[in-house]
Image (tube, rainbow, N blue to C red; front, side, top):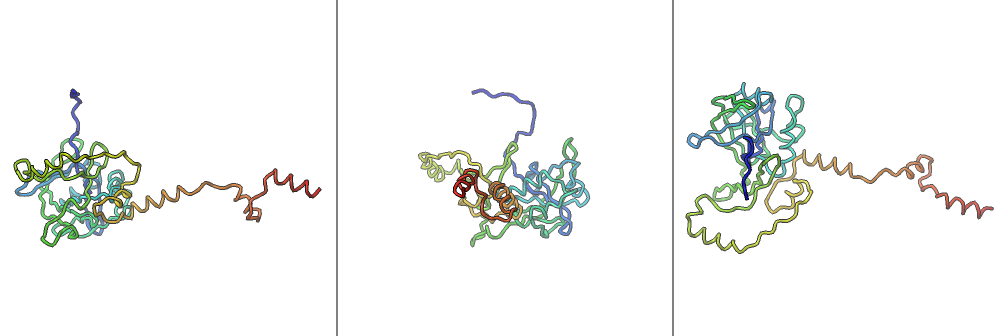
Length: 272
């Protein structure tokens, strides 16, 4: 095996296909951005890189705040839509069925359907070429309480988060271990037992990701209105083909299908 050297590029994957919401609850906008992540822990800081031509760039430059919303498996159609459509001529919240709700510390709205929303206040804008980087402090993190158990633990793995890698969307795989497991003897012993377990990779199926969400074991919420709209359109297009013979018969006032030429000949001979 040998490695091949390519020209410089953005080959750092996977990344979160985050929904970046901005504006106000009354006049919200949302876009999908993969160029986002953590910059610092104390104080918590993040960033999002946006092209200057995007409407979100204009809005965030003025308001100096935005929300990073992490979407789930059943929201993937809305995530893709918000990444290819412009808020200049499309109300993306209305088209996708996403719900803008008030944030706790900033003016920009968060998205109700996302289990995690990170409220951010812009500290600095750095131009780097194709994108401008919005450096921001994290002022609050909002989470869906249905993933918090009685002890107060937040079960992130049950939210059904998705990832983006090299132009495609993916679900997250199985848990391989928690931070520090490599130096924990008890955890290592438990993992050795899994070495004898065979993992079979099934063939890829051409199914909607929303359908897959309903069949998987992870507790995922119902498909969004936007996803249901797509399914409805596909169901309509898959109806049976046009029956011209039946249509012609109905137009003549006769619901029964017209007799074939062979049947007509037999009928004429009997009368003769």
